[in-house]
Image (cartoon, rainbow, N blue to C red; front, side, top):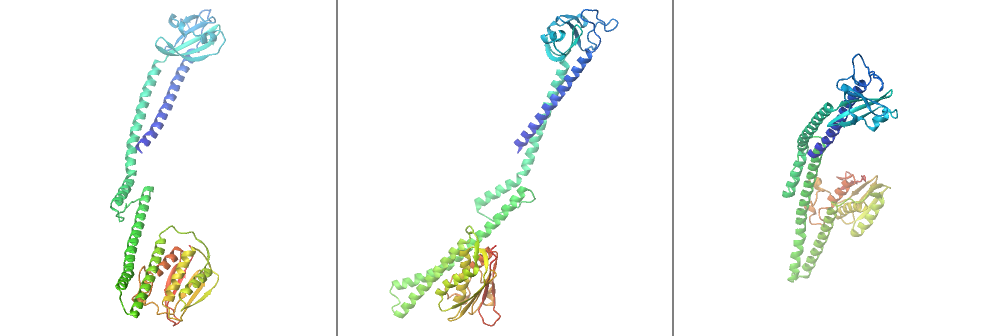
Length: 436
């Protein structure tokens, strides 16, 4: 920032100094030209006649700082101020003016070691040439150059100093952000924050970074909790499987009935383990990149899911009431949520019971006639891995309803638990999908 600021001011200062110098130089030379023109404007004699400007006046120029001389048509100096002449200044261009072949002109020349400005003007029978030394002009221009160089250098140094101060102040939030990032990288402590204040771009960047750290901290905490809960839930069926298999390996129990019961327990634990692993995969899939939404006919999806679930629960009858309903959503996830609701209802329904399913206006209602949900447990039914004490003997992972909640929220909807008021017992779950 310091270098760019200094460079920008250097370009501007040098450009302004050069422009100012050229303007001063042009003005000073113009003053000299005007002075030479005025010096050559007085009355002069013809090159061949008596020279009279006034009584006793033998000067060609009427200005004391200007030297003048008269040149005839052949290019010879016939008169000079103070009786002197400078033939070296009679160039071919001057002779052409004296001979009537060219018009008046200004020029810069060197006489001896002195730079001079020349003005040549045609007169009758020749030309008048007036000359003024440029020494004072050159001295003034040299002083102007020094002043402009000092001005440009001072402006550049001042700009560099101010650029350093501004850059240090402007980049202070970046330094804090960098220090926080390095600290988080080193310690993996996602609780650190930049704590940026202000409304500028860097402050907004710091605020966004803090928000990102907060999201990462929440996500990491959820992942750790998921791993801890999953480990606990997996440990139970695995321990039971290992114990039962060790008993079978030792040939126990010997009683055929008890042995058959043990094999039944093995199958049950395997089913629970399979369900748990499937639900864990579904939960992990929620963290992946969202799948594209598509238009879904919700009533058709419900009928497909009911047909599939009916084979697994032949002892329960599913009664579907539907009307055409369309949403935007991910079919596999919506079908998974509906399957979990139907599994939950069928699992808690007694043999021969009916599960009522209603579809209308992007909403799915699933009503069972089982024992229902206790009032004290209603607030926890959608928590991951939570299972009531009365349901721990049933197959399941404790993730089914939490997956339904995740699907509902990802589709801009919600899922709620209701206690039916018609006296039939059981529970009713309402899944609302907006396809957002």
